[in-house]
Image (tube, rainbow, N blue to C red; front, top):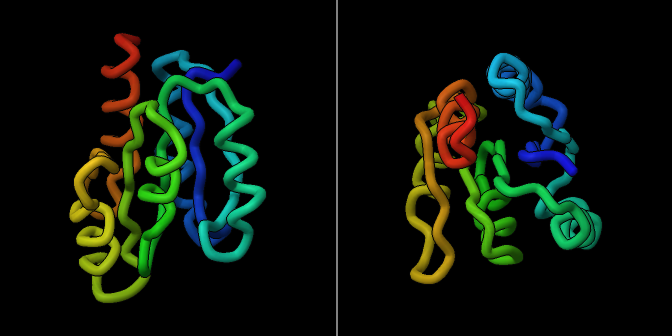
Length: 128
């Protein structure tokens, strides 16, 4: 059972994921990373969310950045979104994650701020 599920939407997000994983290792948190897209393989993503018993999710996504919101719509556990600077300097992804509708909360860190996402997840879990 991992404490934290790290889901990235694409292999191109790996540099951000590496920052997250590095901090999670420093905090000695257990984690699992998968690459699943809300657009390319939504059924696999839905199954993963339903089956994993992680306490916190981190969704890493650029462009339309639907991934963190998709995760939050499928679980009541905390979701942290990391917008990636794929296009438009990441502003498009930032707004997509930060402007979630009522009832689908997603915590949002800064653009490409994988380290902060990991630190927030560690604080949620009270792991120092």
